[in-house]
Length: 284
Image 1 (tube, rainbow, N blue to C red):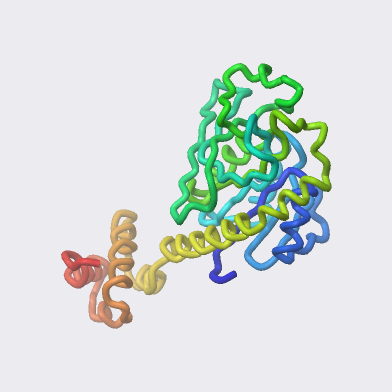
Image 2: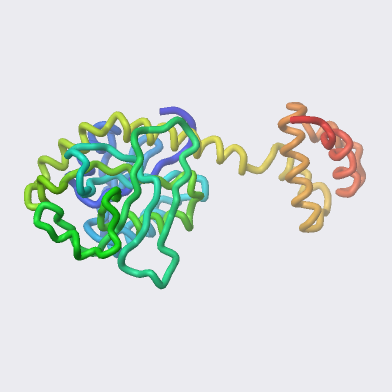
């Protein structure tokens, strides 16, 4: 993989993590209690355990210990149930809602900006397993037949959408049970094989997210010459914001040293005036 973008992978079970660890050549961190943490080139992976509370705690933990920044990507990978989809079906999660608590904002709509990864489906996060084969789906009164269901994704979205932007926060789910094959038939070995079969989609998603994170990092980085100019001249807070905007336009339009261009400016006001003259009104 290329670029300096980073992707944080979040999985509930080690059976889900194993194929990812192998394919992405991740190694376990020496002391990562209370959650198992693996890392490699541009990728970190945390194993959360089952349930919303575990997922939320693990995402917060990974954000803290990994030094995650605003332009890091986050991807939740795991199995999910569905009423009718075939076992092993891979779906990008197009929306997430939470069944447990309607008193707080409980819907998220991830924004994928590239070519479609695979077919898409909405997802509902529940607090206890729903076994369609056993007929217990009535336990969730507002469940829709088109929805996947899991026990972690809403917590993942709630936490990660606070520490990154929605175009960098996504989920890929693989169907593990349906109306013909219930949760009792889901074993760690089968989970591992389903995730392994989905690796082409997951790996492409990780690659695309890293590229997007890298591009966003470049956009958000301080433009060239800004630090030097802030040391040379005094700018108000409003002027600093304008300086950043004008320097980014300079980088896009000129591609030469801005410090040479404004070397004769006596103060910050003169710097801003010169940059306006050089950049405003010109198409990017």
